Length: 149
Ligand SMILES: [Zn+2]
Image (cartoon, rainbow, N blue to C red; front, side, top):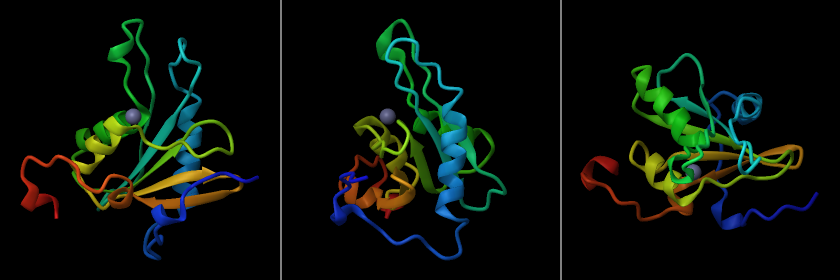
């Protein structure tokens, strides 16, 4: 299966992280709980956070007032914060089976708040592709830019 993820976005996966495929599997598992009655576009996300013993997951939750809909990545990051962790190291995003599901622009900004150099794991056929948020979204708005470096 040929799927386009630009090579310029790719990044290495650190050897001391849990396997990227495990993080992606957690995102794919929670995708089944998505609430997407309007778009039927179900998304799951899983966050690997520094110092956390487990992944934090979230799914997209739509609303009849469409603009209130919330993405899976932001729900997963919110679960991380609620559990007392502040630094995501990687987020896996799972959309349609076998296809990469890029974080939307709002999620890129939202995630950069916590770690501008976060890694993003996407499904690419049978593989887990790893890309860099810093390459995907190189100039986020940071209220305290010195803390984001
Ligand atoms: Zn989003």
